[in-house]
Image 1: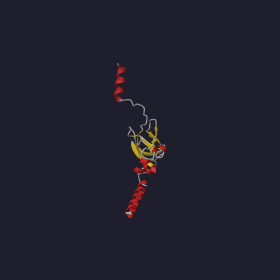
Image 2: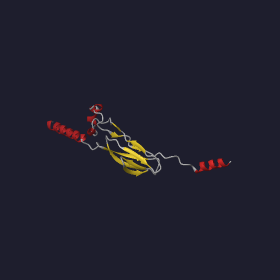
Image 3: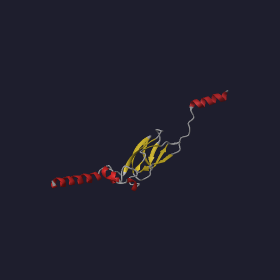
Image 4: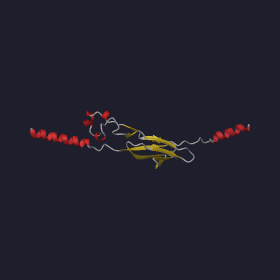
Length: 144
């Protein structure tokens, strides 16, 4: 009986150890940036990630500046945000639900700092284009 209890105790210790070093903890997040203008060039901290839309990986606990540029338009800027993930007590305990259940995660603010939101919409500010229909109506009104 003693051997059985020792074996169970070792198995439980091994399970908790492996669980606490799981692969769920990450120091980066993947963000998606899109624009309402399909011709806008999108940048994250000055690095081009795409035209119209793009995806990139950013480090957690850092703020990045997203810009949308188009010739003839004003550049639009937006900063990334972050939030504390309350489901984990410490970042490395993400895969240990039994341990994080018994740990008060409110005591360690900012231990995770995930990028939030993961999708951003940034559109350059373009001047209104004169519609051909409005232009012809205005010129007809001047002729009368």
